[in-house]
Length: 459
Image 1 (cartoon, rainbow, N blue to C red):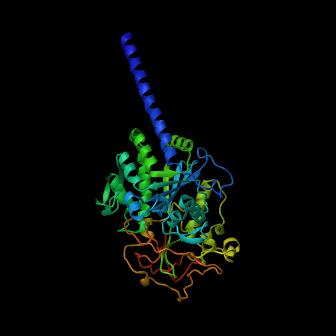
Image 2 (image 1 turned 135 degrees about the vertical axis):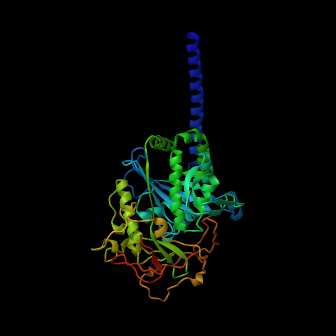
Image 3 (image 1 turned 60 degrees about the vertical axis):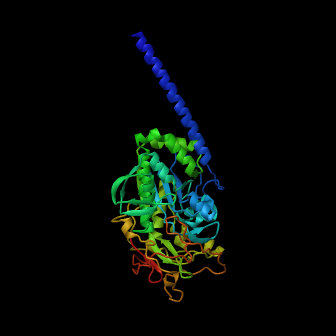
């Protein structure tokens, strides 16, 4: 009996030593991975925060930037990571009170003010113009919500993460045939619920050939939820060292190791709910050069802002705190704004969605009544037309055509090639556009727009 007891103790000690060595090595790998992927920003926190936050105690936001970079594209175009546009942009708001993560998808063509550059442009261009700092500033100007942290993910990480997790279950909405990771082959998928490997998951988040760019954004939100849910499963814990290596090799972020450890500990032991939305809006062609943009719906912007600011413990916004709402009738892409429009101008009438008798459309911005985002929002489709075929409206007198602020000149505009491979390398200026504007007119309440080159697609 004593021999058995001694043997059991010896085996237990050996097991503890082995586990201790494994955990020590895992900790070192974690620390090394976090340190190697850390990339700070030039800013010392958001100007929309009055006080510093503790992510282990407070609600906070993380901007997720997906850059569809691979070695072949980098070598072909002689580009560094900071030279790429973002193919995916989501703001994750971690609600510590409700154990919920609110995911806000921002379509890459969304017309947004860039504070550093002092003009409106597609939000996908913000990263190219100034890296993560510029993207964070652009999102803050769009939503009037502080961006506390960022994570920039090389889209090829999708392949490695999903494979490390042993695949993810996903309901593929339609048959797909997409370029593979290295653009040297194809990935084919049949519609239906199935377990996807890494290459197949990448095809799902890249594809926009059947539905729209906005439909792709909705799938990306769903894929993020699927990956996060699988990562929390018990089986995934045995693959932590693999996941750490994937993160170290494919991401950059501005979170300290201690912050990540405390968050991982908290969220691995608490059940999280995910609630997602995608910014609604309308198709818009710039009358000056026919370039395509996505015009964010002002009411949805305000509603999302109100919900997220409440989650973060901030004061409710005023509609004109948001530059897209305040200048809704005066926005012109690539036009420098003078000080009057930036600091003093305010419309005489409140925005249409704040006027008496108007029926709100968007609930809290996330739980939208009778809404199917994939059916109700358009974005660019797949019909290729030349810029000359797009409506110019230069002399149409359409009431919705934005008026240019006076006294400033325009920045130089680029004319890069448009890639239709999901790489996000579209310039929106003199490129091939995918869809004619819809003909429906907005009639959702007082103050809406009529005619012109904006088309509103409803809820």
